[in-house]
Amino acid sequence: EDQVTQSPEALRLQEGESSSLNCSYTVSGLRGLFWYRQDPGKGPEFLFTLYSAGEEKEKERLKATLTKKESFLHITAPKPEDSATYLCAVQAGRNFNKFYFGSGTKLNVKP
Amino acid sequence: NAGVTQTPKFQVLKTGQSMTLQCAQDMNHNSMYWYRQDPGMGLRLIYYSASEGTTDKGEVPNGYNVSRLNKREFSLRLESAAPSQTSVYFCATPQGPSTDTQYFGPGTRLTVL
Image (cartoon, rainbow over all chains, first blue to last red):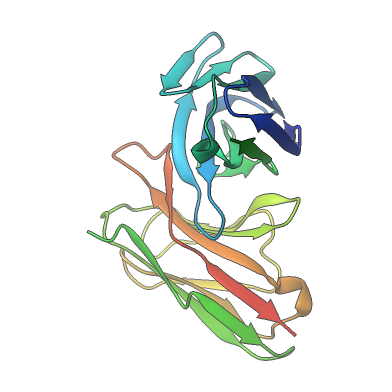
């Protein structure tokens, strides 16, 4: 069964304190792994897509990496405006039109 | 260019009432999706439509019906609402020419009493 698990559920950081969020997955035939940011009361906002193990993508203080079993979202020197829930999703090969989401990591960055 | 719009933004129903959630996209994409989001469970796919006139079940379709009225509109109907359907509902469509990345609407927050 296709499954996506994110950890930790919640993370509190001080401004400038770097850390990583984890997304582990078990799917048959990964087509893509996606990271989204969600602010309270809003829809998810796209951040990155990763397609193959070893691939990395960066955007400002965020860097996403992918292995055969998991993905990491590294946050370097975070700021309070990075506070949000970060969602991971996978697109599986058997059901290319379906996306499976993790339950998210709620990040709180204190000034 | 509004992207994806959803109506209503908020709704309160009594058990057994029916309602339709509306979604419209102006991005001219074939695929559209309905998700529900519950605390601690992430987003779960209810139904999707790969093109006008076609719909398929997702992970949690029970208690819902959908209609792909035309290329722009994809509606989600609750025939007899239950408290278990209290959730936030999101509509999505592909973000660009590729079907891989999804663009989400602002959501409908539904409470069933």
